[in-house]
Image (tube, rainbow, N blue to C red; front, side):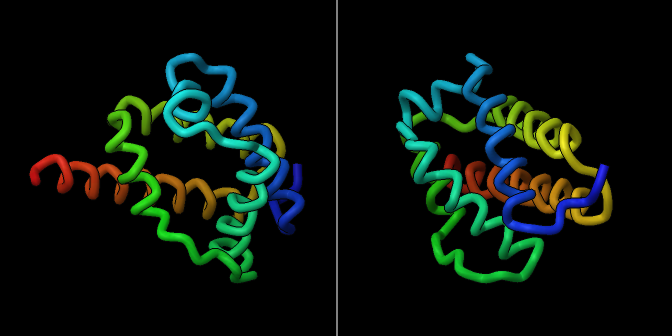
Length: 126
């Protein structure tokens, strides 16, 4: 398997990731009931985010933390959900690619999940 190198590679990962998430009833409700996402709009945003993070392409300007805090206010984002999320994310990467950028993507995803959980814990203390 090759390493991920292009936005098209990232699209393949995020599309696989969302197929897996939406097939998992323990987490899919977040995307179908709590925040109803339109995949045709959402996936390109994720590709832009990850392309910026991994490939330095730029173009992502949203506040990722606030987006997730807003979701948490509608339905609790628990540590168990983050674990499920990260497991699906890693599986989507491993299904198609391997290499340095893949490991960077996994590390950054874990860092994001950790920061989000810290921010949520801080919100819960307010």
